[in-house]
Length: 542
Image 1: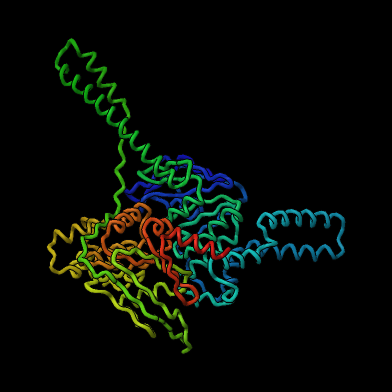
Image 2: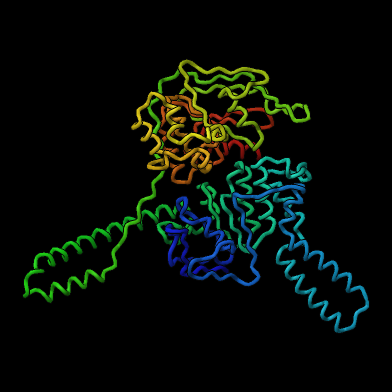
């Protein structure tokens, strides 16, 4: 369907890949992985034709359609949510109009020759319309929007009234509704809650029969959806036949084999060079020396790619808190809408978190998870009810929007220095190094950082003081899978208490021992891990 052969791409002196290649076959399910900056987004743009190759060839099947979802959704205005989704299938809608016009023309007097030509045109258009599943377009658009969490009551809501995260869902629905032959998805789960992620998994399995190429930092999602991994790293592209877990195992095996081959080659080269050095001055061995010089010159050296450096999160030993870390008593929150009416978020929330608990706060988008964390962190006031922190509790709060509070004029180093004024330069540099800021990077202005870099700065400032109660709102959003694993390991070894919101099911499954669920304004407590919670929910649903 799409073949990329001997492709090369570089920006200035930065080589992304050289003489690499892979294929996207019909109905294939592929995950695209690699470190930041390796060229994943460039590959997407090359496939769509937005970027040119420096060398090599890309061939696409004739008439194949490509749908590309990226994190840059562009401007949305002047349409309702449903209209915006339908607008993405403009070619299909135009075909529908053409079919109607031709059907009307068939009712008019025509010569035999004109009718034959009209019927031929109609047959071609109808075949294309059926290929695009045009007869189900309206139903499909509504189904996809609903599956992504935007129900019928919001179909006719102006797109301008949706927040950035909800606009991302509309943009994703627009691409999915097209049902292209090739679907390119760049981090499709970033702004989805768990329910919408599960729906997307099922839709891709049951409703989408085209080819899929996607990036995702959600391990569970990758494992459930893809059957092949395409890795962009170290200036080449490598294909692995399996899901993400298989890829990790196979990649490590291949690296060990490469290291062993490299070691054998180095030992052999050392022996040859030793022979050359020993007998180079002896005329009687001149032919042998020359032969061995030519031999080692022809040997292609085995290169060991550098290991990808990941964020190394290390929490210092926190001060011991009291046994009861948090008590919540009938907490309620009501926000005021722009028109002055009340918007109740939740009410009557009561519960207790004890020292050492690792609690997941779950619920659909809009249930009030982030609002509750804001209340507990002191960033908002409850409308009624109360909560109290236990003895010697030091709370550290990671917010989805904390990066917006950073001073854009300060450097990364200055920001950390403000957070830990008594620390020496070495301590600050070590902490920044753990978050991939080293060399000139520590002198970057906050205003020039990417979203992921800003997120890492916030995490670093969180660790700048000893805390024993971590309140984390989507801490993994800007971390790749490997960095998520390192954060997960650090949290599992953290001797304090954790309350977090995350849509990463693998992260929750591996970490938490209790679950608080906010549903329709009320909170239920599940005294077990995340799998226990899922089992209980499934049991309740029959």
